[in-house]
Length: 212
Image (cartoon, rainbow, N blue to C red):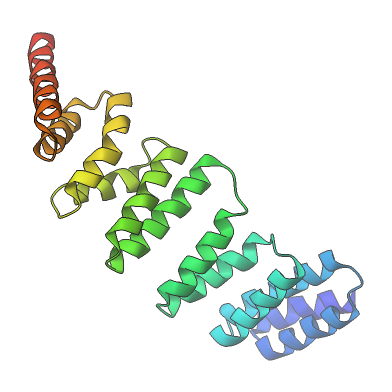
């Protein structure tokens, strides 16, 4: 069609305002929600990219979400804009919205890990630890969440981090990490539990020596 030829020409020329005008005309004549969604996605990408208009991009992605609340492209566009504007509260809102839409374990884990990092950056360790634990529950061995919890073993949340890490270290037969976690948990335990954990740690040491 002439509109599509015009779009291609304007894109080649970098005539972004003219390209936007064509998109707006196509949007006005679109007859289905699928067609409107496709055009809004193109308009949002145009504002976010070559036109470098973050406010217009955000407004367009919000329109796309209103039309199709499950549209991940719109959500991820809003996430990029929130990162660009250094708005952690908005970013968390959009990450949580995506979390409600995805179910693949790796996607769920990745989103929880991002939420954990946001909370950690904001100084909310309780929320961060919960999110990292949820990431590991979704995908055991998730590297970002695992590394984040290991970092906490040297700080004020060491005991909580050790509690979250212990079952995953056991499942992975990660003995060096498990030894450290058992020692940390022994420090905060009642005498009987402390003795049991220290005994288990000694047994692990002995077993590893026998296997070497």
